Each structure stands twice: as C-alpha cells, then as structure tokens.
Image (cartoon, rainbow, N blue to C red; front, side, top):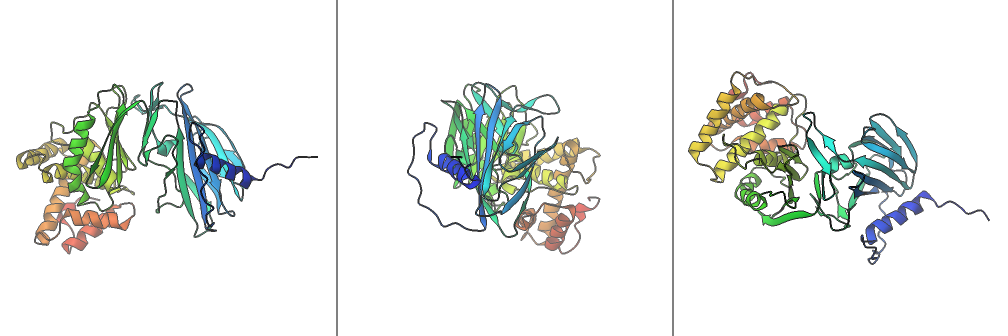
Length: 420
C-alpha cells in the first residue's frame, strides 16, 4: 500500500511541538492545553543552532497559519552569507535575496548562516570561536518584506541552541533551549533583533529604574562589567525621564580586544568594545551615545541622520550633567571642545552623520534647547521636542523636526537657520 506523504500543516505542528516542549537534553515538558485558533494570526518560530566548528549557524524559520495569511516573504540575504537554502513551499534565490512562498497551512525554511562579519576597515564586529559567539539577531534572521492578508498579525517566538556548557544572552533574556517571545506590535512580520552573545560568559545582572540590565562578556576578557553597571545606574534614570519608550530589558555585550573598537546600538542592546572609556577625555561617552539610540528608538530618513546623531550625542552629555556625573564646568568644556572640533562644518542633510558633522549637530541641539526654553519661559525644552518625535512613531525627517520646533516656539527656529 502506498504511504501518503504528511501534510505541511502536520509537519509544522510537529516542529512546533518539539521546539516548544523539549529542552536541549531531550526532557519533555507537559504539552500546553489546546488554545483557540485566531483566524487572523499566523505564528513564527525562529530557531538557530550555533556551530563553532563550521563557524556557522543552522537556521530554521517555521510558519504555522490557519489559512494562507502569509503569502510571500522576501529576505534580504546575500548569497555569500546565507547558504544551503531549502524548505517547503516555493523558494527563489537571487544574489541578494531569498524569496519564500510558504504553503497555505505553513511550512519550514532552512538555511546556513555564515557568522563571521568583517567591516570595511577590515575588523570584525561578529565572530564565532570555540568558546564564544557574538553576532546580531538582525543578521541571523534577516530583514524581510512580506505580502500578507490585510488586517492579520504575527506571533513570534525564538529558540536557540549552542554547544554544551555555553549560555546565551539576548535582549529577550537568557535563551539556551528556552522559547522566548519576540513579538513587536509595531511589526507585521515579527523577527528577533538586537545583539546576541553566547559561550562561556561572565554575566552581571541588576534592576535599574525598574529595567532589567544585563552586562555580558566572554570569560577572561577583563571587561569591566561592574563599572558599566554602576555607570548605567547613575545615568539611566535621567534618560527614562526624557524618553517614554525605554525598553524593559537592556543587554550590553562586551567585545573582546581584537574586534571592532567602538560601540554599536541594537534593539534593546549595545555592543561595546572593552577598550572604550566610559567617559572620554572630551567629556563624551560612547556607551551613553549608543544607549540614547536604544532608548529613543529614533531613526532618520531623507537626510535626517544628522538630527538622530546630534540628539544622541547631546543627550549623552546632558545625561552626564543631569545625573551629576560631571560638573557644570566639564559640561561646558565639552561643548567648547565640540565647537573647536566641528570647525567650519556645515549643518547639512546626510544619511550618515559622523565626526565634524555630528559635532556641529550637537551645537545646533543645544542652541535649539535654549531657544525653546526662552520662547516658553522655561516651560518647554528640547526634551518636549524629542517626545513629539518619539510619540509620532515614525522615522524622523528634516521637515518633522522643524515642524516640532515651530510648534513649541511659535515660529521658525533661529537655531535651525542654515540647516536642512
């Protein structure tokens, strides 16, 4: 008798059962009671197993849906990093994308992800070794554009595996063998984001202003975890008062010596090289600059990156002063140093602000803060403009920034004369 091939929904259901009820040791947990099926919700389980021997991760993305809600997914996935793509449904691979049309009742997509990543300057900001791995979940599970039925939403979870003896830290919490929710109500297609650190780790945890803060680094790197926690304890409360959407969890991963020597923000997380001082000689702070990016959630578009970077640097300084971490004299000398550094740099539209352009933007932010305070008799400040921008829940543009300033001042901002 010919054996019938199992239906796609059955395969995905079995995968969800295994992922959701088994630990890495294979011990079964009690199966959850059946839940009511929402006909307008599709579920995604993201899974990955870190493989230090091959310097890759074995990735699987499983979709379960009551009907064909998710119709097409186009991942931004360059062929040199996303390998051995296979799965159920229709798959089309181009040099830069993976296009997946999952079956009507769900299916599974598999691929291998090459973890090591080298920046343009030849230094790595992602790597896997025999004892640890540092990478971004955003890259492990790449960004995608989707075609879905109007009005539907996704529910997503994450489950990670690693070699025996390793632990894993993510913005969603410790993640070895655990099913973690990664739902984001702002996204139609939920996916894990932020920094991931795995391996034999040194981890420090604390509760700061009702936020769970975790500082993690590979064992033996000498990363100053306690210093970082103390620094965050001083400064985070002043940022919470300004930015309304500070995440409930914050992960800071310490990068080893031979990796990229800087700071990089991610969703709910920060990459920080161990050599970066908490406060530089000019009074600025790489850690706080990246922390402002995380807690503000602001992104620029249409040449507005000077605004986002200027705000990040301005509030890194303001947080140091408001928390009394630095004196008023040092606060003022920091702006003097920025003025000297910026030199003749102009306030220009740019999609990548850095160096002198960002220094000039910080000076613009301070002038604008003073102008708003003067026009409102100290009742409003740049803090209120930031709340307008974050409340809009949209990318910042030059036009929306100017409009917010006009709303507070009652007319065009002098501080923005000559700016885009």
